[in-house]
Image 1 (cartoon, rainbow, N blue to C red):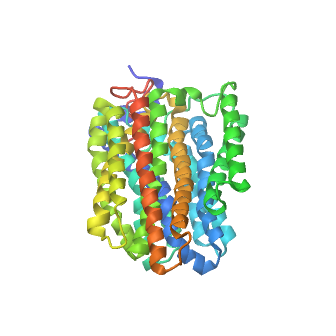
Image 2 (cartoon, rainbow, N blue to C red):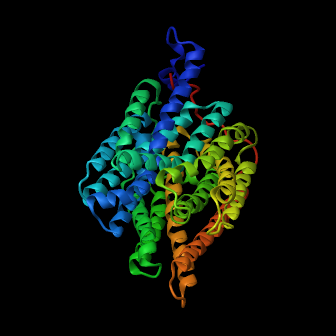
Image 3 (cartoon, one colour):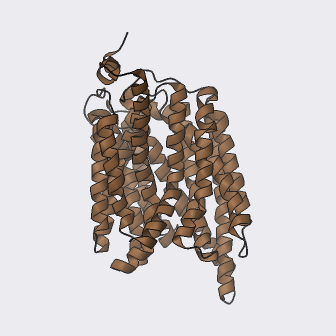
Length: 500
């Protein structure tokens, strides 16, 4: 017997639609969703490579450069929960396409910007529409692939893109900045979004919305305000210091308002974030693991980039190419062990193992020196980190949305992006602060020389790599404690096929 949702969304009953066509359709749907995820993830790093050139072109200060990055993070991180809930209420495919079109238009606006204010506005708008797009993409993936084996493969690919997107952004940003213009780091989203919109129109199918009732306005306001305050305060830590009022004030306010948000969610009839989503052990394990690992990832992307450009004098393109072996490692384990083993044994053995492997790679990077080479010094650690991250991302993203009721699929998907964003913000703030302190301590009481400055930079990188290794170890412990043993739960109300 078939459910109403199956009859509405499955093409199985259409004349002339073979099983092979339906099977191929699901994988075409994955291509569309992966394109959208790639656009959102790479935009977090592609603009970083272009920033020095953009700064020289339109003229703005270093503090303005920080806000080009922070503007995106503030809007994206604070609105993800709302975006996920809206997809549950108004349809995931609809929000997915709205997010794609809006993200593309915001990118075009940024590419045309002639002043800092317009560039920051465009980046914030990218974050707004990215917050609609990212949870819709993950929840569509969830309800498209319901067979455990197929789902493992799909999430392996999707997780590989999530883990590798930052490195792809560095490479693509370097190529576009060097051979075209920094503006093409934004314009490239128009091409990606156009392909994804066409694919979504023809290859994605959604279920009828099962979320009812009014939107949780008080929960929305407290969630957005709390997340904005928290991310803003963390963003100020590097430039203002941890004891400054502009750092501590927003962080404390954010924590207090997010506490109020939890209290609100316990009492309202239609919560923005039903706590049943978070309190499940597997989903809680996913959220904790990805947040802590996300903090550690900035040690590899941000500070290894500094090492390659300042110590090894790599060009933007060379820096991007240098990360390719790590991306290969991510893709290898995410699409093999991560996808094949997760449906059989669950995430509990895989995620701790992957996080510990990544920690081992970071420990190798702590051995880098001023005279180290890329091949003997950087490359082994990069490959090992990549192999570990592939075992972290694929199982955690799968677990984060497995077994969730379809009325909560959007908000469950939003949470994985939210915690990754918050974890990344915390990691950026902490690691930048630790790096600055290590460099200052090395320089204290000494006569400045170029050699001393270079050695101080190395001390800061070593400190960051040690802390990143520690973050990965903590992520491994959290995963080992929180995840349940055994395979992931099957969706309680999954329809077998929703793509054609």
